[in-house]
Image (cartoon, rainbow, N blue to C red; front, top):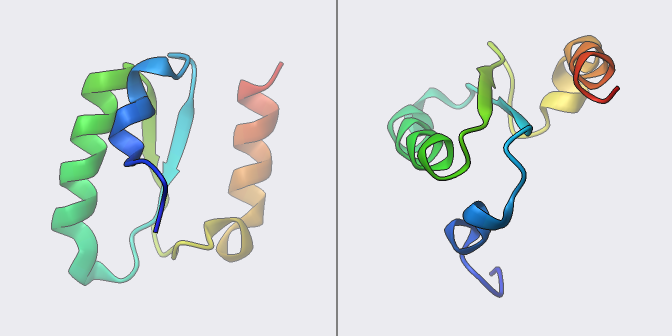
Length: 74
């Protein structure tokens, strides 16, 4: 359990965050959509859906994560 709910810190985050969002398992799609909408509203950040990835998307599609880091961390 987290000490604080994640939503409590959204407004403290910088707007230049790029969140890479997983898609598997599909049963979580509605929950992911809901939380992503709140995240985008509170932070004005970018969210990119990475198909066929789990919570461990950096293991599932490392090449995509590498490209996003290179493109957004300059």
